[in-house]
Amino acid sequence: MITAADDSMTATLQLLGCWRLTVSGRAVAVPGRDQRVIAAVALLDARPRRQLAEILWPDGGREHAQANLRVNLSDIRRHHPGILADSDPLALAPGVGVDLASLRLLPTIIDRATDSAQLWEWLEFARRAELLPGWFESWLDFEQERVRQQRLSALDGIGRRFLGFGEADGALNAAAIALATEPWRESSYELQMRAHMLAGNRALALRVYESARSMLLNELDVEPAPILTDLAQELRYDRPA
Image 1 (cartoon, helix red, strand yellow):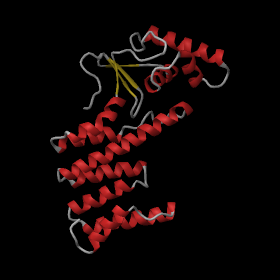
Image 2 (cartoon, rainbow, N blue to C red):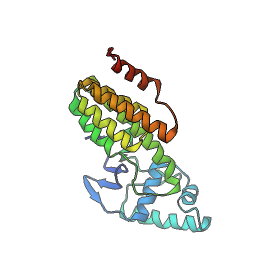
Image 3 (cartoon, rainbow, N blue to C red):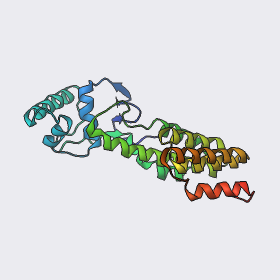
Image 4 (tube, one colour):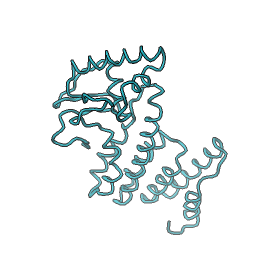
């Protein structure tokens, strides 16, 4: 299990896959209105209270927004002390770990993998690493897209490491998860092709190329990237890829 928290941390905030706060190893219930505030503090870095209030409640006026934030902060500090620092700008308390840190560190961690068992664990982490799915708020759009790109990059890295370990199934799984999120991701199609080649399925590798080319032409009116076309040519003429 990947964790961003060290031994000194007493609480972990999960934002990938779902919202979950764990304190001393136990999940705690937090009302949705307070979840919004804690999530915004975690994602938007240290923001002055006035600015955070206007981000979370853009309609209704400044005084209304600041009053809402004061009520939420009072509830959080009363029911969940130690989660937010007593500061302005607002920030999480130093002892609170956030699972987003694990996603940001994943590219470096992948490069240090010593066996494929670790990669399967990280693949499962990346599979569910969607930022607050089901939350639709304008202040969250940019953060969700940034995490989406980090997740896709991590999946590509995991797939390449699987190839390095000679495990075609792992690479195919990583590519499939990425393509389910981004159907036009050419690096993931390349990963699929190379995985099939590793498994000795040259015909399947060519089928991936033809499917990707058809989709890209029909949907975006573009030809596949040269690396995909070159790989297909190598397969057709039976030259080493």
